[in-house]
Length: 79
Image 1 (tube, one colour):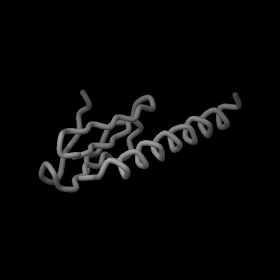
Image 2 (tube, helix red, strand yellow; image 1 turned 90 degrees about the vertical axis):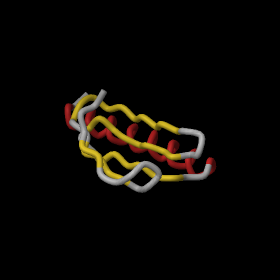
Image 3 (cartoon, one colour; image 1 turned 30 degrees about the vertical axis):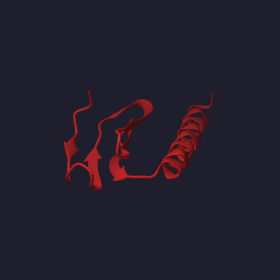
């Protein structure tokens, strides 16, 4: 489990600072569509309430962002 500091209440928008590590994207959903989006690259963690179509859009954008970050990392290393 990630060590982090949480601000806000469940069901409200909140932000957590996550420690840097390898790239991972996690989306947790409960029955009322409270969504927690986090990365393990030291970026922010965000909790919000969303509808299903908005959630799918968010997941797709997150995947594209991770591919971009991984591509940039490989380019910097010269791989």
